[in-house]
Length: 344
Ligand code: 2P0
Image 1 (cartoon, helix red, strand yellow):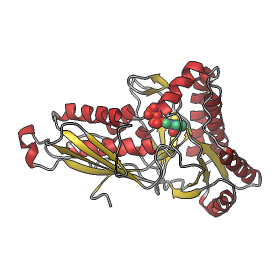
Image 2 (cartoon, helix red, strand yellow):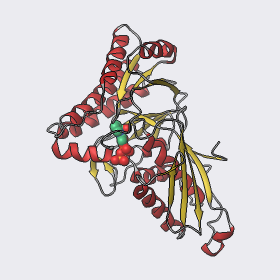
Image 3 (cartoon, helix red, strand yellow):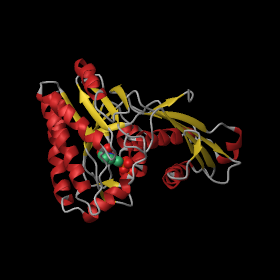
Image 4 (cartoon, helix red, strand yellow):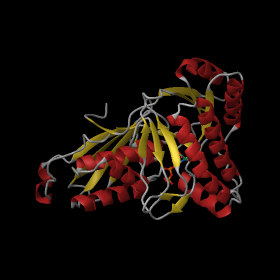
């Protein structure tokens, strides 16, 4: 949980030039087993469907937010490069926090990742969760984890889930608000995730644009939204019962239904390449042979295999043989967002 982020006083503005208003936070990407694709409300970024995810531990984003009276605009860099692509979302999140803290300063936002960004590896989930935590830390805003999750969600729906570790659920809108919450800890069911990187290219269509396009043009969109609640409950029960076979079935089904919606959009959104489909078949073959492993694929060509830890070496070896797999990452399930002492 996020209880460590409590501060005694909020400095008042005249003193701000004399205090250090900066904080560093780390968050990990999460992989949805029941997918989020589509928005009920675009303005407040309310998802149209409930989702359920696992938070990773070996991939991370670290973000430093430092408010600076000398700045005339927010200054955002990602992996050492100035980045304007996400600046409106970053500034919107900073504005929400500035209003709450009564602060008018701009900030340096310096973010780094240990994995490729914008390629379907959930970098916006870890990125906006880390940004939200570092911003409230820098401004000494008192906030609990659920509120932090709602703040992150406004910037990026999947970021709400990276606030928490282990198995995380984001149920349907309750009183018009949506936040994620922890379902089961990482140690309560220690699954392993092996990620097959099949391309390092940024995805051609970002998730928000893709979701809008699917809602407007896919004949399957309404059916997708209708069936999501059932998949969510099935996956939730399977996790609580540690029922791997049921979790495997419902997760693959949710993934393929989401891609069916993407592919039935007009013009179609096809995020896969040849290696993506070869990895999917490889993992399906393993499961047919009795190996507890299943696949999931997000808005990109990378394939994530989820398995029991004792099978991880076998799954890794099988994916390594697939033509077009450029790199494999292995991860346990990990913790939620946290404040760090340094970027190192
Ligand atoms: C998910 N994705 O559940 C699904 C699967 C992509 C495919 O959540 O528009 O980048 O910023 O709220 O956070 C992508 O979500 O979308 C996503 P926005 P975001 O993980």
